[in-house]
Amino acid sequence: MSRGPGGLTKLLLDAPAAQGAIYLHGAHVAHWQPNGHTPVLWMSRQSNYAEDKPIRGGVPICFPWFGPNLQDSKAPAHGLARLHAWKLSAVARTSSQGIACELTADLAPFQLTYRVEFDQVLRLSLTTRLSSSHDRPARYEDALHTYFAVSDVRNITIEGLQSVDYIDKVDQAKKKTATGEAIQITSETDRVYLNTTHACRLLDPGQHRTILVEKTGSRSTIVWNPWIDKSAKMPDFGDDEWPEMVCIETANVGDHAIELQPGGAHKTMP
Ligand code: BG6
Image (cartoon, rainbow, N blue to C red; front, side, top):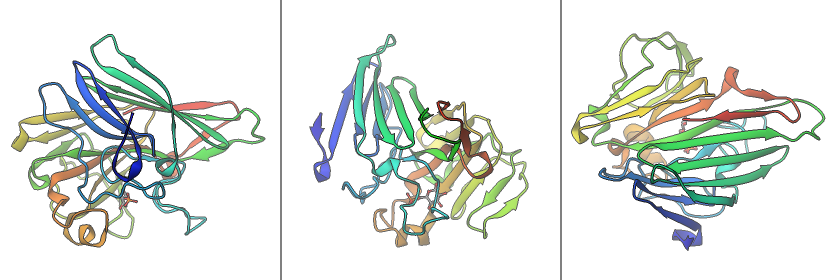
């Protein structure tokens, strides 16, 4: 454990297969570098590091709502988990020369367990349990909001969503039908792909790298790049940083929110 910027507690993990870093603030994975590769996750140089603000980049956890809270406009965007002080419950080497850690958070009536395995593959798994003493079922949304480092977002391709309908958040949240084409980012992009369990492939010829994003327990995928104007409006995102990143988020949002019975649990895994 060490103190990172803003005094936030940071866990640095180093194993033969990979290096990683995770903040207890938000259980925020901030670094993953499989041996022999450049870092896979993108972090903003303008990120806040403070207990009352989310970290920009890496893998924020959105929970128990995604985006603005529709019942309470003062509640933080993307929920409470990314602002919560998580507890570290375990760290252990894996059989494949990687290193894993587990963090927990009590966000009543839910209990969260997050397992992160830094290896040649980054394995994330977010388990949500509804307390058995809760008197009724409860619903939540979640997203593992992964920011990938790319050579230039204008030259990447994302495959796997060409047959999937989506909500276009940059066009008045209209529902749009599948384009039939792999995704190329040519302007601000903020799409919630609906009812998809498909894996995505992120092709980055500039880095000679293809990233496979597989998932289970997730029926929505969000693809986001803020492009020029939106970047300029975000204080914790550099004006010139938008070409360096793309988010492919493993999620359960909107109609695909998860409903748990008291004592029930669900696992979301990209
Ligand atoms: C994406 C949303 O998941 O996150 C976007 O679809 C949002 O609408 C983006 O702008 C970043 O959100 P935030 O709260 O981290 O600035």
